[in-house]
Length: 286
Image (cartoon, rainbow, N blue to C red; front, side, top):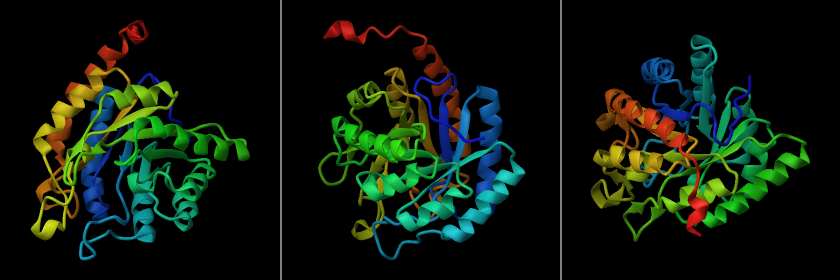
């Protein structure tokens, strides 16, 4: 059954998993507690991992196992976990079709969110598409991403099946901020909206010698997550989860440990339900 993103779903989407598909064993170790938590808290789990981190800061950084190997690992995970939906990034149009044979949600990385050919190719597979809103993009300009998605779907007479993910906006050279107003703006475009908790914690090019890796402030994960949830405009969450974050091969400063992720989700999923039940009266303020 193909996953379909909805606006104001009955259960929140939780996109979670390690930043990089470092190994099948890591993916297996992370997916099991997440699946148990999905049953406990009643959310729709979408397991994620990247086969290639094509936008690493340094050319010397490890990029991942590659598409062919990672697809085999995802296939194994789905066989071991019936009904599991999986997500991975695609960076080039040539990757889209082979990824779509196994992957349920194709993700467009933030730096590529305006790449029309990549968006069109992903949408026209019929798979769900998650578009990361670029750090450089105003939330108002996300409407142009939506227009591309709509046209691509219409050309193949496909239903709209996409989400927009907020991951912070560039603030100076080495920081990100999350403008909570953007969540409402994108939601008003009738788009399902996801909040990327862990990437919003990044301090780009601030985490290592000569700025070769991104730094981050993991301690602010609950602050940002609770604040975004309280807006009432989220349809789901994105968070990267690792068994040993400090030794992760990418995004070591921002990924959450399994217990950290569990504690956080036990806070924000009930909050999501409470806020969702409030009547929307924001229009009375002008």
